[in-house]
Image (tube, rainbow, N blue to C red; front, side, top):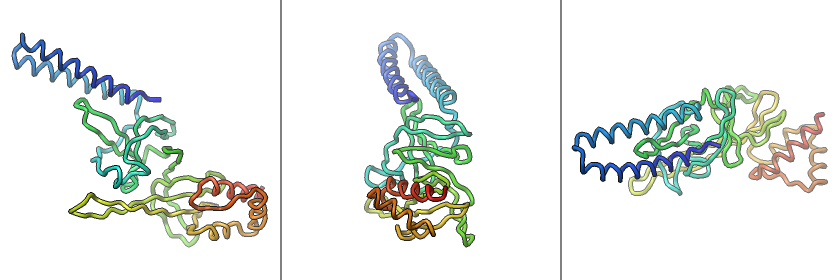
Length: 251
């Protein structure tokens, strides 16, 4: 686990101690020397932060992003506050201490603090981050997904609810509405898909999902009754169970 938050706290304490020391020491040095001392300290502190990021967090490759939103209206998945999670960068797994998934822009965001303790949000490059996990949800970057009729879906991160021979995917999106008298509002959009044999099918209700089981539909229903499992598309656990029953019938 990265110690990023501990580093930030340590740097803050060190900065405060240096400030007090400079104030006391400044009585015996010139203003120009004082400014030089502070500038050298800030450069040294920034170098420390940069080296820490470069060594422990090579995945921080991307563009600076402006933070926006509040605890009610925000473009992020689940919460506007960053959380610890994992990501796959260039086929290697890393732990990260402060991640956000910006659904509006379909970007995984990493947050850290600069030498003057400003918040820095870096939208990580999806060409290098193929997968990440936060809030017990796994997101994977998919390209060139197509329906049976040849319609291409958007490239981007999809939540992988079930990850077997078949995959149950959720595409999260947000729409943004402007109001000059109030904060921007964001509305969630949720699209569900079953990926099977390289093709995706849009799933709008549980009957559509059951229909995909074709001749295996009856034995799947039997297993559901025997195990008292009810299919609910808003319940990831029930989706996993039902798809496990389905794939069991294929063996």
